[in-house]
Amino acid sequence: MRRLMINADDFALTDGVCQGILQAMERGVVRATTAMTRPPGAAGRITAHATALHGRLGIHFQLTGGHAPCLRPEEIPSLVTAEGVFPRKRMDIVQASADEIRREWGAQLDLLRSCGVSPSHMDTHHHVHKRPDVFPVYLEMAARLAIPARATNPAMAAALRAAGAPCADAFITDFFGGDLTPGRFLKLVAAAFAPLPDTAVVELMCHPGKNDAELSRISAYNQAREQEIAVLSSPEVRQGLQDLGVAVCGPEGIPGPLRGFHHNDADPAS
Image 1 (cartoon, one colour):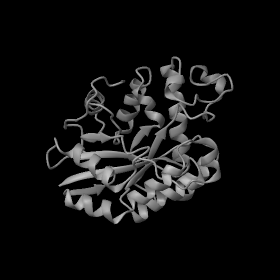
Image 2 (cartoon, one colour):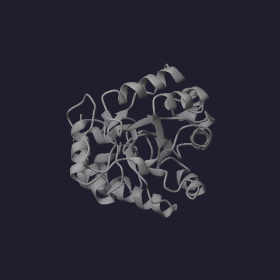
Image 3 (tube, rainbow, N blue to C red):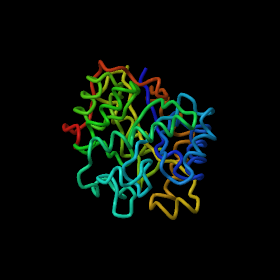
Image 4 (spheres, rainbow, N blue to C red):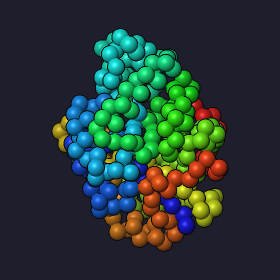
């Protein structure tokens, strides 16, 4: 049977984002989430939900978002701004040092584990691992952890699988922004599965969340997160997936390395 892992990015960003993701998991079709460790208060939020989310909570590695790093800024100068925080966006990074990424991500991983979480899967905030100076370290981490890792294109998937890291057969990144309706959600899913065999697994990225005051302050993508909760929890989506012959799964449903990948991009770090 076709399987779909719907992953909610940005767990622990704010209290409201956590509440929204949990609601989308309890009442809807979301089966996995990846946690940020660098927002203020993130460690407490992760610790509070570590037991309940066992096996479904991965790590959302950060080099962006405007947050303070785990390590002291002077230890990782290529990764931080003059103010000692991560740049806001992926394109604002000038040239990241692989050694500094390796040490910072190791510290983020250690922090997540100290919160009681052994990550079930991995990806990055703002898909920073698409950068050519970042992807080699992402590949190292995926190989070392041997957990499902998000691939955004075929070359990235091939590299991950060659390193022994599982990844989905295709990736849906377009459930974001304006047209957040059950119809659009199901259209994206149907299109992703159309060229794939009946045993395929697809990952879909989403960003459900409650629009609390902190989220409104730090992110332009706020009210739309509440609309995502509504869509992901709707009877139309649940029935539509059933009609498509698609079952939702968690990270345990991501296949091992000997699979193909379907996407339009070709460069692993594009």
